Amino acid sequence: MADAGFEKVADLGDLSPGDMMAVEVGGEQVLLANVDGTIYACDEICSHAYAALSEGDLNGAEIECPLHGANFNVTTGECLTPPAEDNLKVYPVQIEGQDILVGPPGS
Ligand code: FES
Image (cartoon, rainbow, N blue to C red; front, side, top):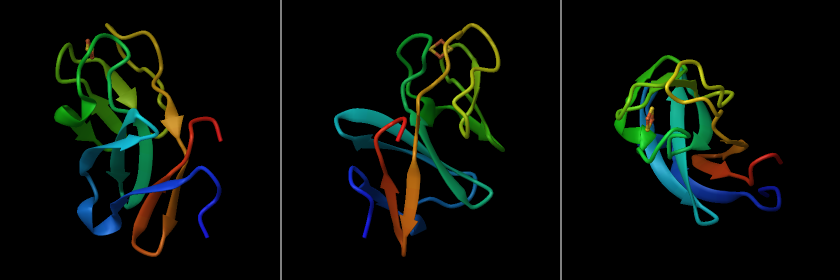
């Protein structure tokens, strides 16, 4: 059984290594990223202005914002380069069979 607060957001088969997709969790827009076979979840909306990070480029664990080019680490949410200054929220991920589940941030 999934832990309380976790909900299924996608199938593992939908997200190959190096892929990203945007999903909604509890009304929040969340980015899923497959980094070398491990799924990570963080904010979909850039912390700088309003841009969808799933439309940016994923290089390894680093994502580049499509609007002004800030880089973030999708595994930690850490902001790596300006013009963004704030880190992204990260969300816990569980895999159950072929299901990708995401829980509330900070849990
Ligand atoms: S909106 Fe992402 S760097 Fe400006």
